Length: 330
Image (cartoon, rainbow, N blue to C red; front, side, top):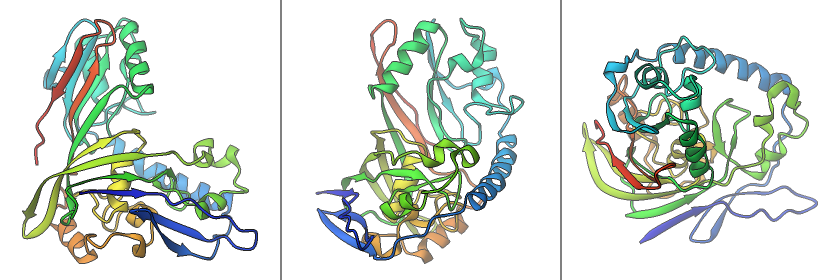
């Protein structure tokens, strides 16, 4: 049986601003009848600045990776496919001195443009391991960008999540937005939270904070229900249909099963709990707070358990159908 989690459509009324949580099997769950008040630009900016400093420090802790350390899965004159370890940045970010997979690939292969940034067609978060494609030629760069833009690349992830997911497969269809309460992280978008953005100054907080909600779809399949140090966990295959920032992390948290080792969207993380949803909106099979805390303690200091396991696409130049796989370490 498949389970569908989707965002309920708001019924706007002139005299009230009621919000609804995600619907299960078409049934909307009321969340709150009180609209949230608008937030102050200065407050959001202060939170952004504090978070950015923390993220800069984390980026600087990226593990060093040389060209000889690369785990190359495929290479030809146009593209390179490598398996990234957890704890390494895909790209260095604003501080080009940060160690990154991009730099190691560029040092080993170079690029037609002579620029390492012109090799990047997608990326994985620092804490996510798995397959990453880089372009070596300008033609490959244009072709791969087109494939990603038109969603003609299929990526599947393997993840361990807290608790036992009851349904063997399902879809999570919840729109995402930037979280002004916990910037620069993401959360499930609600009408109330969109309304609270009214009055924010884009010149101060940035245009991304004020972007419209992004439709986001994840499908999942249960691989196995397991035990980790006496705690219930589930091994899932996740497919990110829409490929939004932090989509898998937010969606798993929003159905009550955060990814094991996720210190941002998991138990007592830096982002909003439950992907920003009320506890009452979560399904009956959600992992309890006690279980999440036990798993967080057991996994402290260990890599987050999400791995880009497979990627399939048509070669941007030769037009050959390609598919690659990489085993997870957990």
